[in-house]
Image 1: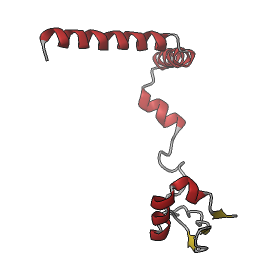
Image 2 (image 1 turned 135 degrees about the vertical axis):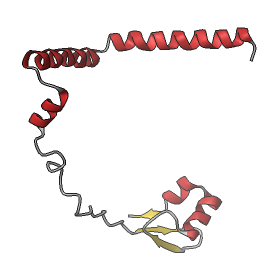
Image 3 (image 1 turned 120 degrees about the vertical axis):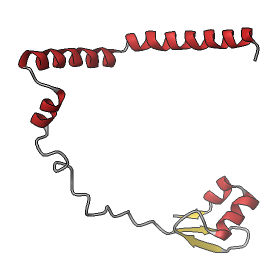
Length: 120
């Protein structure tokens, strides 16, 4: 890359970042977050507290307030889907989209067409 092209690319990237910065400056959510942080820092200075002190006050037992991770979440059972090929009358029952016959149909007839063969 030539020095001129490199310069122009860097200049363009800088302009994009400046535009992003301007949009962030006008973001109301960001303004509220900045105001909150400033007020929190002021309170911490007033009372002589550190961030660790604040965390200890708000969450005296870290890790214990979380729900028990020992019980694994159960996945919802997959529903059996039945597809019927109107050309051959053949039925395919599957719980997922990884069925060999279903894949072959989708290659031959197209996914949208095969999805329309789903029996309710």
